[in-house]
Image (cartoon, rainbow, N blue to C red; front, side, top):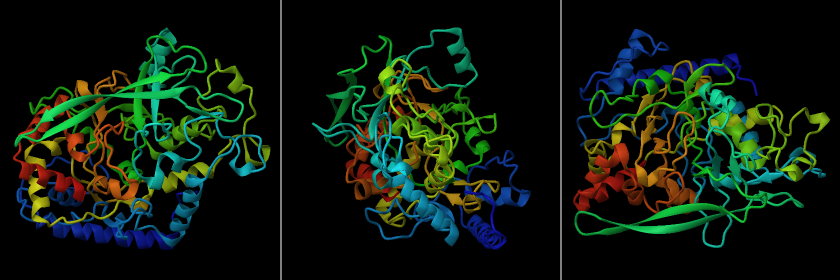
Length: 518
C-alpha cells in the first residue's frame, strides 16, 4: 500500500481540512474562556492555527450544553452509521472510494484464519506453531474489546505476558538502550501461548481464581469487586524460571487507532508531569520507546502500557506473538517459540519462495495496518441529555479529565491525510500513571513500572455491550461494569475514585450515564 495521494484526492482532502479549519474558527467563538493553552511545541501549525486550536482546546466552564462538535468524536472521520453490533467495524468516514477498497481488503486479511504448514491453502500457511488465536479477529471480535474466559473455556482474547529480571550485562544494556522492553522467560518466551498446531503441545493453561472485595458507596449500595489471581498451570515444557513475572492483557477495541497515532507527540509530552510539580497529585509520564523505523526515541501510544509507537509496530507484534506469523517487521517464522522449545523449532514453516521471505510479506502488513488505522469511531449519543451533561461536569470536577484528556486537534503532518487536523475526543493522555496496588501486575515493561498503566481511550466505551456482548473493562477485563472499573482506580486516581464513592446515588448514575454516551 502506498501512502502517495493522487492529485484529485489531495484536492478533496485539502477541501476537508479547510472545512475543519473553518469549523474551528467558528467553534472558537463559542467556547467559554478558560486557562490558556501553550501550543508553542506545535511546529506543524501556523500562528493562526495555534490561536484557533488553543481556543477549541480550552476546558469548558459551562456544562449546561454540549461543546461545539462534541458529538463528532473523531472529527470528519466519525462514523454516523447505525448503532448495532457492527458499530466498530466501519471505515473512517472521510476515506476516498479507493481507500475504502484498501480498507476492505485489509478487513479480509484481519478476519482470515491462518493454518498450519504445510497446507494446500498456501496463502494462509504458517500458523504458530504456538499461538493464542488463529486470526486477528479471533481476539478483536467485531473489532471490539476482549473478555476473560468463562468457566470451562480456554482463554483466547486474554493472554499472559511473561518476563524475568535481567540476568546479564547484555540484557541490562539492551533494556537501557530500549532495544527490548522486557526480558522473555528463557523457555516460554514473552507470551504464554495456550494453543499449538497438531502434533505439538500448547504451553499450558491459564488458571484464574477470584477474591471478593466489597466496597460500600455513599447511599448504602455495596459493590463487590472480583480481584483475579492468575497462574500458568499444566506446563508442557518444564518449569518456568522461579522469578517469572506475569501480566494479563485483554484485547483492546480497535477504533480510532490512526487518529491516536496522529496526535502530535508534543501534545503528549506537554501533559507529562513525572515530579508532580503542579501539586495536583497526578504525575503522568510517557513510556519512551525506540521507533525501529526512524531510530528515534518517541512516546509509546499503543498497548496497555504504551509500549509501541505505531499501529504497524503493534500489528506486527500481534502477528508474531499472537498468531505466530512472520512479517517483514518480525521475520522469525516461529514467532514466540524459543530455542529451548526444540520440537516447535523442528516443525515446517509457512515461508514460500513465491511469496517472499516471510509468511505475511508486504503488502499484507500494509493492508492490515491500513485497516487497523482506519476503523472509525462512532458518533456520540445523547450529548445534550441533561443527565449526561451533569455527569460530564462531575467527570471534570472529580479530576477524571486530568488523565482522561477529552480532546485534541491532530497534527497537520500526520502520515494519513484523512487523519490530519481533526478535532477528536478520545479521553486519554496516552501517559503512564500509578494506578495503585489493586491493579498492579508488578512487572516492569519499558519505562512502565509494575503499578503503572497507560490511560486507555474512552471513546466508544459505552457501546461495549452492543458490539462485544459483555461489559468487562480494564486491562484484564476484571471489572464487570463501568462503575466497577472506576472503583478499581487507585494510586494517582484514588482521590477521583473516592470522590465517586462519596457521590449521591443520582450523581453517580449521571457520571455513568456520561460514560455510556462516549
